[in-house]
Length: 72
View 1 (tube, one colour):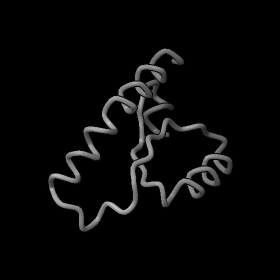
View 2: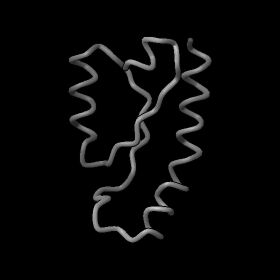
View 3: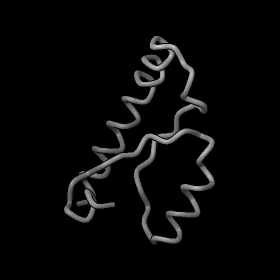
View 4: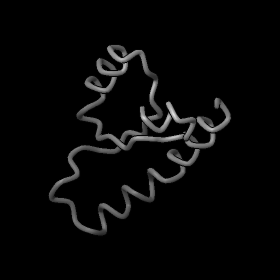
């Protein structure tokens, strides 16, 4: 939220376990954050698995940043 308040685009990577929590918190704050959800859990994953998750999240994250940048 701090980045957006300063006019800087931002995106959060959040595991699917927290999808409902993100929705509740977003409503409570009156804020519609750019979110990319990744599979849960992250802990205990191998380096290769984490790299694959990061690779899969990169393009959606960049799209969120580009879309957010156009809003400001």
